[in-house]
Image (tube, rainbow, N blue to C red; front, side):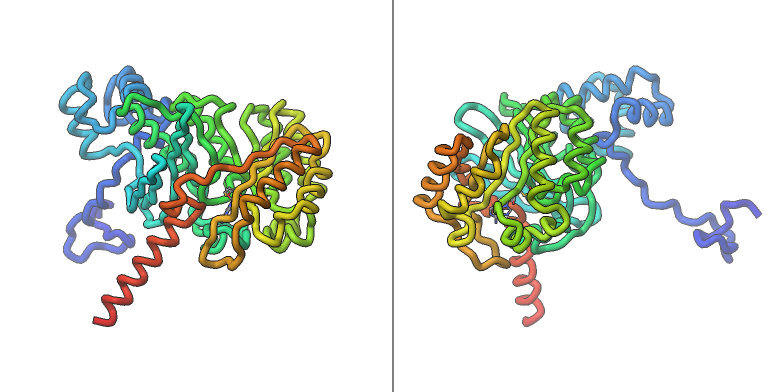
Length: 379
Ligand code: SAH
């Protein structure tokens, strides 16, 4: 009996027919680096220089379709169209804000949904805010993604592709992506290796320098030290939100594992190693962390450290009842910090008309899908 006459579970096929061919899986060429492309093309019997040609089409000439790759032989283009693809992200929903912000909800091949946002600035910068995980395990009380829980890690290619897609679109408009912040869904340092690999791809394939990339973390202390060891010039942003352990633990459960004192030591180390200011994120929550006393406590905590404080008025989310701090409270908070020598700014709220807070578009789309399903069930 030849192997072809075995059924998929290894038992003899009663009809003696070969088992059906598995569905043709398309190879994602975006997920391959130059060596990976070379290996794939070699497997297809193509000469080595074709890998370089393809790499150039994908990463330098920004071809979105194989049919645009005009110097490839027609037979190879046909094969690519049948057996390969460029990236895996499918647009599930998109919103554009009056301020130019573009917000995407992408569907991954296994059905998971992730968000990315593109924010144009008046000085010409184009910043992509991308996700590192589907969902998040950190459970910060005020965060829409934290309220959903963790689904799975993203691969390095799935992380980098979010930035690559915006860059391609901008290039078609005569612009380019200039900055990337890992401040979308997920905790980047909980997916450390894929995030580091994705940063490498942003560097090499999209041409975004480390100094134009920011990683935002809840404060996973061992990973901050490990990241410092890589010697990159990437900017570190740390979500602090309180200068008191008790309050911070209530907002961010991770603080029970890595309290403020240990986190600060890791941040100082990163600032010294990278030579870059660490950014501290502070979501202003009315009556919780927006007082002048709280600002003074924060100023004392950050004394003599090369850093910057970013205040973000709380974006209201369904699972958290508190309200944002007022503009007056924000101004007094900034003034207090500055009087203590700590630079601080209030972050301009981008795309506030389009659910552009972390995890909010996904929550909204899922709410609408549930409502539609319920309406269907009741007819
Ligand atoms: N997990 C990473 C990155 C994702 S969130 C981190 O926590 O740093 C990016 C930033 O948005 C974080 O500072 C986070 O605390 C903040 N954030 C999340 N939900 C928010 C909300 N509802 N209002 C204001 N800021 C929020």
